[in-house]
Length: 144
Image 1 (tube, rainbow, N blue to C red):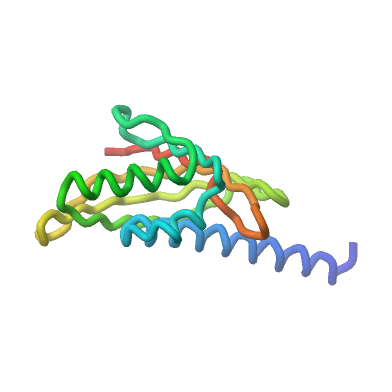
Image 2 (image 1 turned 180 degrees about the vertical axis):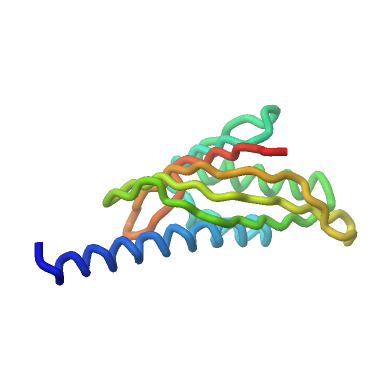
């Protein structure tokens, strides 16, 4: 291998990692703003979401995730803020990656100051679809 090919590979891997890190931020913003279009852009069509709450069932597909979001926000008057940090890409292949990120979710009810609801970690499988990284499986592991 020559230095030029190594540099191209390194730059491409760095760009992939940045795109994956940005996907975590897009998902948090979509969730907090209830932006269903942006949320849909974050997932594969058959995404599996495994919530950290053992009482909540796993969901498959974008619509199931969106429906759950809308239902939760209609049931209670609250605002959420998802803070997602420290994304770590554990494996990075051409069309598949495994990554994790720490997360803290804050809730504000009826305009009150936000309170910490839960902290934990997302353990994710991502797939490249139509030139973009998307979540194919999301597992939220609760710490509190």
